[in-house]
Amino acid sequence: MAKLGRAERQRLLQERIRENPLQTDEELAHYFGVSVPTIRLDRFHLGIPELRLRSEGLARQAVRGLRAMGSQEMVGDLIDLDLGRSGRSVMDTTSAMGFERTGVLRGHYIFAQADSLALAVVDGDVVLTGLVNAKYKQPVMAGEQIWATAEVLRHLGPRWVVLVVSTVRDVPVFRAKFVVVAVERERGGPGQ
Image (spheres, one colour):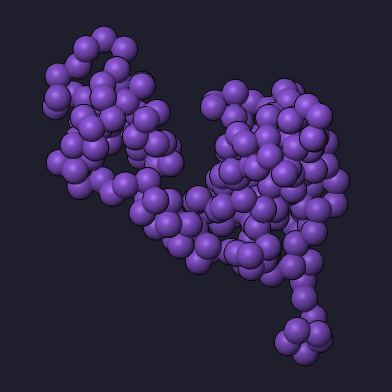
């Protein structure tokens, strides 16, 4: 990136954090070609909290909108949720999630994050995955951070079609279309 003036860099910094609030100071410093202390100073002047506080605030806000499951049932951390429309989650993977010999992340972790996000965006009390068309596009190494973005493509009666795309450092690694069914819970039955 070309050398920017402070005012322009701060404007772009605000925009970049608005688009992806979980970027580290190190990632932002690399992107803007400045030092980490410069980014911290810019954040301070703009009133942008540190990463930990940004992520906690986003998670608290998104979890309030969950209907189909509790926050502890999500795989990954729910970052934002527009119920019935879209949502995003992030998952920090660990070495224990990968194959011992290769370090490649086991696919069921990627799927579980995408599935729980697809269920979370559906506006219903009880939702179930009915059908999935999934494609693993690239291997993910254990220890990498996975972002999943869900978008409701169609909603017809109890059936919802939800597209989930998972990325690592903006590179698509997984893509799936979920047919999710919202089931009406009988009043007075179990759990009532």
